[in-house]
Every structure is written in C-alpha cells, then in structure tokens.
Image (tube, rainbow, N blue to C red; front, side, top):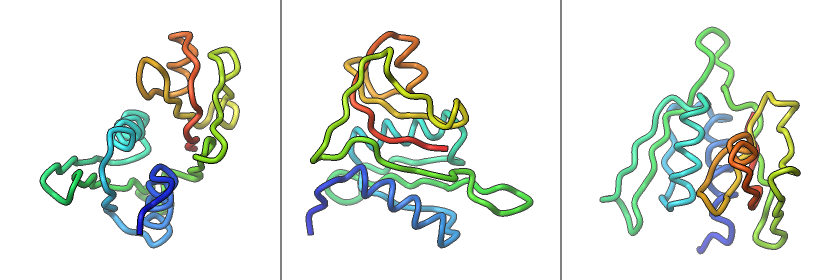
Amino acid sequence: MAVTDPIADYLTRIRNAQQARHRIVEIPMSRMKKSITEILYDQGYILKYKFDANEGKNGIISIALKYDSKTKVPVIKKLGRHSTPGLRKYVPANEIPRAINGLGINIVSTSKGVMTGKNAVRNNVGGELICYVH
C-alpha cells in the first residue's frame, strides 16, 4: 500500500516506537526525511542515526531513540505535522511561529534547504512549515 503522506508516516513511526519503548526505529529513506533526521540529531532529540542506502528501493534510516536515563521517559514529548498534502502551510520569515514558547522546534522547508524555524528567521527565509517537535 502506498503512503500518501510520507512525512506523517515518518513522525508516526517515531511516536509509535517511543510508546512501545523501542530503542531503534527503521524508516524508509527520502531526502526530506534525511534532513529532518539530521535536524532532530543536531537539536538533541535522538541519540544517533544511520543511513543505509543498500536496503530496499531508496534505503532505510535507522534512528536510535533517546530516553531520560533515570525516568526512561522519551526525550521527544510531542511530534506533530503542520502542513499536510491536502493543506500546505507556507509562512514568510517574520511569521514563523515559536514552538511552545521556544522550548521546542519547528522544522521548515525553505528555498535554502530544510532547517529549524529559528535558523529560517535568522536567514530571513520563509517556507513550508513541516512539523514541530518538543
């Protein structure tokens, strides 16, 4: 069965793996998912990741999920989609919302690549609001 929204599928796989307390989740690879994974790693939301281009048609992203060492609570509290295939949300640089008063991040697809909302504002570029993480 073909997935109509691959980014929503990516986010759902991460949410489900965390709820089931899995350490690693495997997701089909695409350039957009690759960029989002790198941002999640840079921002400290995931432990590590590996891109395996040999697996499947496009390859697989293996993501090691991050949990609090004492309480075993997932580091990612909420993960959600802003823009969907049926309703794209584009915003100029000065209207990019702050995720949970600066405690989370928004991921934005801009003409200069996929980046966090803060970086998009800093570079003064708007784009499509993809998802939020906190």
